[in-house]
Length: 119
Length: 234
Image 1: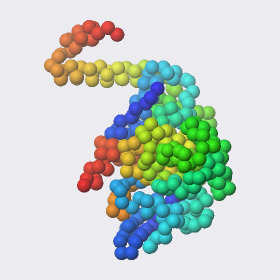
Image 2 (image 1 turned 90 degrees about the horizontal axis):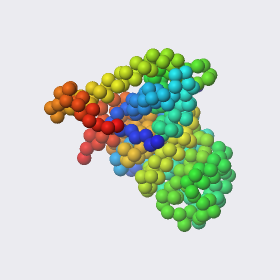
Image 3 (image 1 turned 180 degrees about the horizontal axis):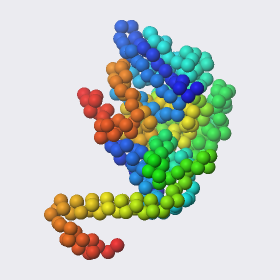
Image 4 (image 1 turned 180 degrees about the vertical axis):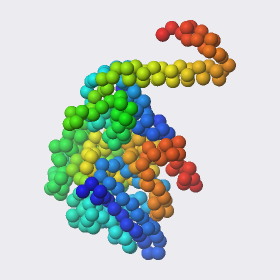
């Protein structure tokens, strides 16, 4: 997969977004060991220091944790991941409704449009 | 010694005759950083780099690498990619590798060969038979195959196509280690900014700004390229 970054936004914030999606979608499962900073930075093709900063941020949110000398793991608290997923879904839904509002469509109409779309 | 700076420049001035090229330059760079030295053409980037490499003598001021004054000892730990090639073009790549092996104790010939192979470059080819872009790749591989403390790359992206630019950035990223730092001078900011930890803006021989790249983006809500353009609008 090719990762693209918008130079207008701090890179570590964009990395944080990618990582959140990985956790929500179960690419890395609860309790699973994560690749090293080096492996991540090679995958994303970013500076390892920037990757480290994104991981530190995830850690401060308790989404991942460091086991001394052993590396980093995804939290065992599945509820925390569920909560993250819920928050993320709400953000996406809000941005959809905002877009619809801009073209003059209310919530009820917006939902009808959703139903018209085949996945 | 974690708080000792890898590179420290104090009150550095450089004049040619009466023309001041660098004015009271002060900066310090610690280990493990990729730093962009960004400035327009003629801002003083190459002069500063040549001073750090002891190829020019300061008019006044001081440059320290690992706390030592510039000289034979500091040259051993600095791997420098000049703006223009100095290699003998009649040589084959394999001969240049031997030459580097003789010249630099920290040169890893096996690593160089592996990187050249990844790039589909034939080491039995003469440099003169290679395109400018290919020659630049060879030079970069040689420079990055040393195990140095400080890598200084002067316009490493100048003559190469965008696909190769990406490859060069990846090569820099995957070959720099946490104990070393890389200084990359360029005016092609948008191509390079995603890999930078820190940026230094230089204009008319003066350091205008030194900052963490993401902090600057956050503060100005713009890309480094955009901030640079705003600041130095002609």
